[in-house]
Length: 480
Image (cartoon, rainbow, N blue to C red):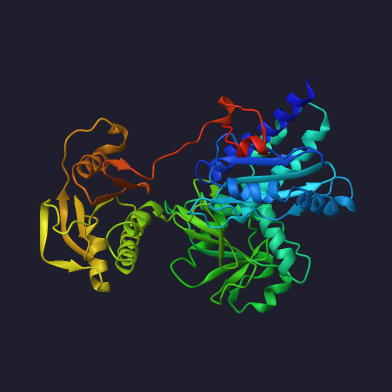
């Protein structure tokens, strides 16, 4: 096999694995690699999705304008390192991207970057994912063999191990002892518990895993006798025990192998915490979220709509900054309430001086959303069929409103009446944004008849595999 073709195959194979794996862990994700395999090689860019466009000035500053200084710095870092040892490189700090870079004697420099989705619990598992990609590339690139499909498979299914790698790193840095807790089995047990029902109900409550030597720091309400302590791999038994701590401040405590007892103390730092919330839950390190879990897998999402596009629309409107910020906070609260309640709703955000006329229940006087008691009422109004009409003075003008409009060519019959009615209505009225929350949690932000948070320029790399180009050509506008 031609050497240059083999090297391209290595890069493409690993990039595909990372992109597919991260797309399952987060949202559809694009990945790019900046690299120089040998110290005298020019910096090259492999960016099939063109996600570096807009960052040219930063790339030019780092890799082109100070090229000699940059190369000397890399050489100094790896000069005294053993063969195969990778030295982490500084983050490029490109807006909207997560990165991991490294340099070593076997592969002079590489920097992996991917999308930083706004609803991520933590970027650290993704960083560990990119680190694994970097290590596998060094191995595959220098192995001189075509048997590289295993790297693709590893990276497609790396979510649990990426989380485990981050937890191990953090605990090693911050605990003053060598932990004997095995992280991957604990993570598998958490997933299995989350999939186990007790009398038809999903698990609720908190379970945390601490090291045996830290048990004396915990104030227990009660403990289970040593010879009767259930092992954590017995997920049906653990699921039953969670009933004792659901809907309370109590927590189950495990030493990683068995359930020790029940406590109502605060959760200690750097323990592995599983917060079960019915059909989903959150994995934490202490009290800091790392990931969510549902449908038998770990995910990066916070399960809360960030609605960045709506925030930008409001900030660009004629409203003053304070009012637009308040309106966004109110809308976010209402959307999160509907998402938590697992019911769909429609919000019409009307910034016209004279509110548009909607058929429905018009309120006299309008209901001010600046009063906390009215926010609770508004959350209840969302459950009633029809849209809630919100005006620029932060008031509910009406509820149970029907949205109508003329047929448009880009309707999506797969999305249902609520969504398509919003498309039609917003196409007919200016200064109106419609937020549609589906019962299965997706949030659509519709303005001028267009869902503005639905655009995706993702292209499967399997179907389109360009050649890596030098950074000089990339900066000159070469499109991959």
